[in-house]
Image 1 (cartoon, helix red, strand yellow):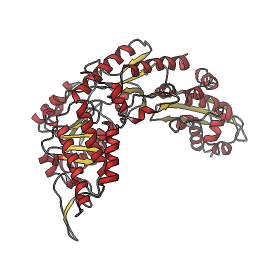
Image 2 (image 1 turned 30 degrees about the vertical axis):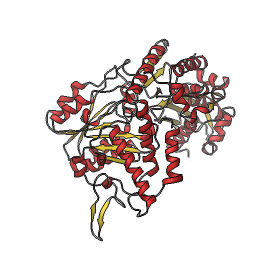
Image 3 (image 1 turned 45 degrees about the vertical axis):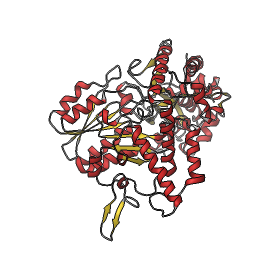
Length: 408
Length: 127
């Protein structure tokens, strides 16, 4: 059943406002999504009714807060089909989740002469932590190339796995620039057969399609709550036995079992990785976001975005001066990056802004990818549950305005 | 706001920049870029015996703001000393650009030629 976008928009208070006196056409959810009343309300209820620190209090209110916090963890685990909520670690954002793995697992398991394999389409979040780990350890870094059509050149992977030096493959489940959804299951099978692990960056995929970390064959998956209608909190999921074996990343309160003057023992997972007071209301808010998205249905959301992307690619094809990065419809998620001959993407974004259309412009934290396509920057429209074809039409109308103002 | 940001005066400089090119045997010769947005400028300038700027040329590519600012800058600083240029800041650039109000995201685009010139003067031992 198609999404009732008008009804969904009613759930997002931000759409009651205008921008520059125009209807708000928000096409930047890949950067961060808007928030529904359900999430804002859940966080408000925590702060006004159920707030106390978690895991410590001996009073009813603290127990209530702890229960809400742990219930949210369980919901998030179910949302990605994690076998055990204890494998769900609450962090600040996907970036911190990946850094946790690169530091904790990486410092222990990556040695001089080992190899780390990335892809050319990685967001800096799934690139720089591995690049720096490789530099610290004297390990090699190799990239699976991106083809002209924005796919991964998977033929490059087997030779990188043959000699057994590759210890981990870090791969996005969906590119934040190209929208490409690489065959991560196949990549995981190949990596595992060669004794390597797979770190999946789910920041763009988890908010937009049904997610099953077990079916994908992930060893680690990181994603951000703020891109999926939730607040500023991130999730790292990892296979239990891997998390068990890993040393802590951050040290302090709540992550310990006992502390003596000269040594300390660590708490169980996931608490071993949650030093200090966690983002309590944020995690509960993300639990509410998961309920909100699940009620709409992740399959329905995915289908809806496929429809919008297909329509967008068709409408943008009408503009001979505009070039789209990445693959065709049904091979990508709800992200369309483009550039216009002779016009800087920042100027595109500024003109679109005046027309009420919010897009991202720049390198989208994927500089090596833009380099691969020989451009410094692009403009990007990204879609979510509150976007419809009217938004795409507004984008295309505003793009005509860009050329009217800035074209020669 | 784009109506303000993309006013006629700035667009004229963007489409038909003043002093576009490179000076041979320049006293100041500097490349600078905004890595985050890909704006690039190559600025060359000559100074007279008293140290005042006599001629400036630029080449580069980038957004309307950085290119218009660069074009206007090549006219603005003729006759100024390195010390005078080193004291220039964002308010001078905004005034030079006709009082345009720049959002935070666009400030570094507008400042590209000034920052390049300051760096170039330093590297040339003029500051």
